Image (cartoon, rainbow, N blue to C red; front, side, top):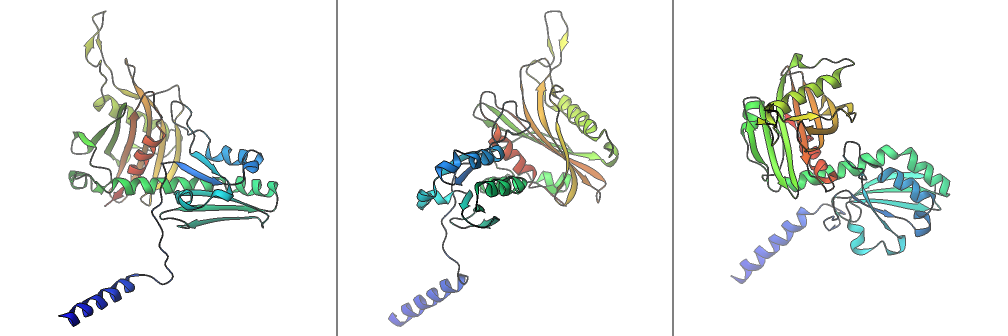
Length: 334
């Protein structure tokens, strides 16, 4: 019996050793609040022109929110104290002086998952130039890291709405806390209660001739989302009679006083249009932000529309909109 015990123990040790990859070191789990970047640099640099260059990129206002909110919250850490638990943030920007000009992006340096960007230069001017030249890479790297992390968090408790795939031939990932508000053969609407309001996801199918690629594409998309809002998202005062005896209609429309952002992009390896801006309810006092992706599905001769919008008065909306974008970007079309 004794020999059997030691034989089993030896086998377990060998199996555990075999699971490890050569030179793979143990890394703790990354931590930190969503959209929070650690900037590692000396205090005098942070308070000077280098700090200004970093803040002009990471703290620039996000387009499409009712009030100005920075793209990232920044935590500055002097190099001398960058050790231990403070190295575990998911997104880190390090400034290294006295070295050749350089820009590197590295994964999982101090924790996992983690993105570490190192900017180096021999002079302040050289460092500032590297920062400005790589502005889009810095934003894209950190933003994609946060979108991926939010998707990972929601995957711990996935939804179970199999009819999305059955009816629309696609999959999309969001948390089980979202409830079904409306379902038809080609339309789904889900909602989630949040601290001071609610968050929404809409998924729908459009005929292939519903959108034409021309100078008015953005207007076509706005017209479609307004028609969907009129059909499905009603206000509290809809179908009420006012003091003049007239029936009042209240439904969601795109706020025309705020020019929507519009761009061509790729989603699930397919051409898509991204549109984001503000929405409001007619004859009511509700509104908020929306992000809409309209995906060209040539194989199935159709367009897929996916939209996230939020109503959250008096609170910051940045993280709510990040979650909705992470849901949209999980789309997989059959």
